[in-house]
Image (cartoon, rainbow over all chains, first blue to last red; front, side, top):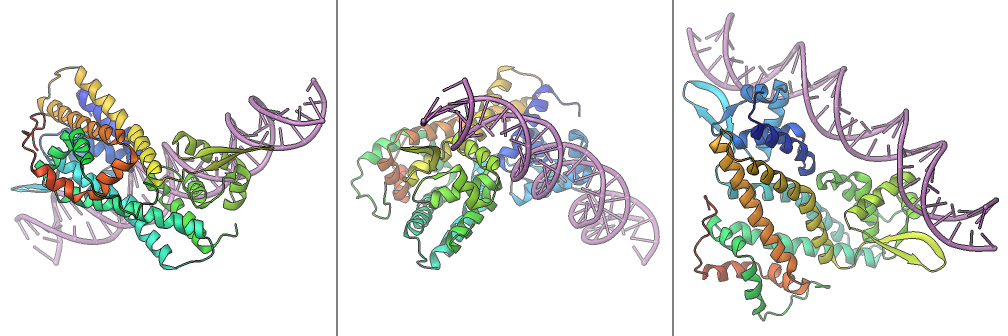
Length: 183
Length: 183
DNA sequence: CAGACTTTTCAGAAATTTCTGAAATTATTC
DNA sequence: GAATAATTTCAGAAATTTCTGAAAAGTCTG
C-alpha cells in the first residue's frame, strides 16, 4: 500500500464505483492505479500496491484488456508485461463508449431484429413497440457511428460548442423523418 | 406464465441484459413486461406473469420508480397501483440517460472536485491527470445539459441528421478551447 | 374503528459474483 | 531440455447480491 491520500481516495472511489460501471471493485482499482501512474506497472507491482492476490490481478488485467482500456508495454531486458492507460483522455472516453455500446446495446439490437424476423404472431401492440425500440436504437447507433468517425479535434469542437449546435440546428428545414412515430 | 414466444423471449432477454445495465434480472423482466403491455399492470399481475414472489415484485417496482422508468396509474373503484412505461420512447431514453448520469458520473465528478480542493500534495502527474479527467467530465456533462434542454423534436432532428452536423461543424472557425490539453 | 385489502419491510435462504492459493501452462534462458 | 520466470487457470472459499415468506405497516370501507 503506502499511497498518498490522493491516490488512496481516488483508487477507493473507482473501486466503489466499479459495480455501477459494470466492472468489479478490483478492476476499478487496477484501472485507477494505472490511470494515476506516470510509469507503466507490472502485475506484481499492482498486486503489491492494492494488496490483492496475484491471480486476481491477472484476471483484472485480462478484463481491462478485453475492454481495450489498458495498453501493454515492454522494457528491454525485462520480460514482464507492463500496463498503462492511454495519455489521451478523449481516446479513453471513445474506447469506453465503444465498448459499452458493444456490451449493452448491440446484443439487444441483434435480438430485437431476430424477434422482428419472426413476423406477426398475435400481439400487434407488442410488435409495434419492439419495432419502435429497434428503430430508436438504430437511429442512436447511426448517430454514434457518425461521431465515431470524427477525428478527435473535430469531436472536441462539437462537444465543447454544444449549445451553438442546437441553435444552428434550428435553421435546418429538413422534414422530420417519418420513421419516428412519436418524435 | 403463458406468454407468447415474442413476449417470453423479449422478457428473458431483458432479464439477462439486466446485470449489464446495472439492474437485476427481475427488474429487467418487470420493465420488459410493462414495456410490451398495452395496459397498465398491477403488482399481482406482474408477480403471476413472471412467477416471482410478491415481495420481489414490490422491490423491483420500487427500483424502477427510483429510476423514473415507470409511471403509476389508477382506475376508478380499484385501489391497487398499476404501472406502465411511457409511450414516448425518446422520453424513456432521456430519462435513462439522465438517471445513468446521476448514478455513474455525478458522484465521480463530485469526488474529483473534492480531491482537487485539497491542493498540491506531492504528485504533480496524478494531480494533472485528475484535473484533466474532471475537465473532460465537465465538458461532456455541459454538452449533455445542452442536449437535455432541447425539446424532443429538435433533438430527434439532431440525432437523425447526425452526419450533416459533422460537416457543418467543419466550417466553424472557433479556436480549440485551451482547457483540453490533448485534443 | 374493525375488518379487509394492499404494499412494504426484513431476516434469512438461495444464487451469483468475486477472490484466493495451488497447480498448470507458457515463455525464456542457460 | 532442464531450470527459471511470468502468467493463466480453476476449484473452492468468501463476499455480495438477489429472492422469498412471514410479519408489519399503511390504507380504505362500512
